[in-house]
Length: 338
Image (cartoon, rainbow, N blue to C red; front, side, top):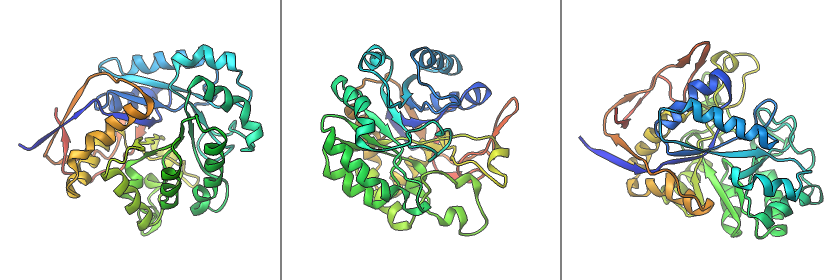
């Protein structure tokens, strides 16, 4: 049987939530990844050393059956002092910046993206060598939100040239041009932005489980992003933005934004990389690039995929939590080895 080994795969943008949801989704990542960058937008968000250490321990407890390292982030605040950031530097991998109200649990995000407002915290981060991860969207027309944010990325890249700036889950071809323009800009790419377009969300019957922010866009955006991933461009890395919500919170009149892809991510990536004759680049995209960009040495862990049909479950369940994954009920041509 044809097989594929991926060394120390990393998911550099992951939502694990908390409580029973963490107990459900945590092991679905730790089973197939050696580490993941964990987002801090809980309710309330992670903003203190005590909160981040406590959350890290809850993650380790949930994923205790596997060799897995959670890379913890803290929620950006405009008044973080240099002393505070220095104190927590060894406990975090980055600081995550959310503009106010652009996505799930961002109600305490930054109200103004004015450089002078952001400067104190970003300047301290630059001096300490702490990267910033940014959800780069405005609150404009839904298809233009990322494009409208690009001048802000550019301003940040110019004003803080020694700060590593992670353009999270980029979804438009215009973002690629800016990414390549500045040495201190990097990006994560998701499975869904590489494989889906807006047609998959609203082209036929509404599919709430393909609804996310930033929303998937046009075929030309998908194709440009996919080529970047297939080439394992050194400025991009895999970040699933797997964001679970209970089934009833998705299938409702005001459904939450977020796609749950953790349990199918490697299988789907193997399928599309194989289809395009780029399997040799998959390890760089899901591991080596992130190691170089963040300067990390992940847990050594080999994940074996086999060329065997995998029927994606309709739901993943734990206690009262029920989550619908991306491609629920569909067949992928690669499986994780049992």
